Image (cartoon, rainbow, N blue to C red; front, side, top):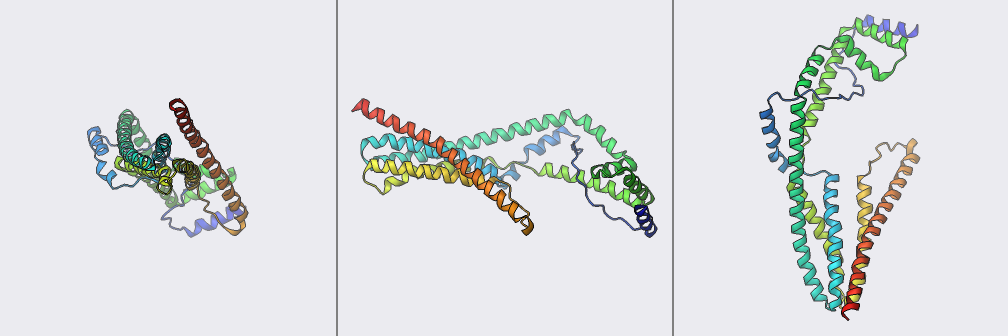
Length: 317
């Protein structure tokens, strides 16, 4: 009774609804597809100019950077470990610098070619999918355009899961106010258009950025195991310091990468402070475990290089 009285009082005022609050709505299928396939092909392959000005996301950059950084730590360390048997730091430094320069260029080119192939494959796959669904999308557009006001109202109220008596009261009130239903239909069309616009705006970055990310990762990763040899005269001491630097770098990089990619806690209200600190501590523990995993995997490669050096010394010597 109280709800009916409130609804009757609202209906007597006859408010004008210019907008309706958005409810959680995720369209299952996009309804905006071009009818001309050839124009769509030109649109897909014409996005290269826009890609050149679009920077990669943090996750994409770290993925490419990790690829180069891991190889940059492993390959130069194995090379310096093998050359340390010669007993001259100058030889180790010169050979290491040459390997880092060649490796960063080759890894950068490989990252560029790989990213360009992925973009071409994704564009072709998207084009084929839109060709196959063109007829289906036309039918869906007609269905959406012919959707009745009653169906639009039911679709809007469905996520709220209201009790039946309250749902009937809300429907009765909405039927007495045509502006409500019109606002719901307009809101639905706006959400569909916004979803289509967001899907069209999601363009991959230029393959050049992917190649640069891999090359920079290899360059910085390769300089770390070579760095101690600039400050020591004994090659054996330089090899030990190089191993320690690699272990520390692997842990720091693994920890930082995992921590940055975790979802930030937005709600920092004082009443939820205990929950925020608990989640933050869990993130630190998970990031530390990721860093430890990188240390373990990198140490396996480093020990393999050291064993090869020792075995070669025993065979030759």
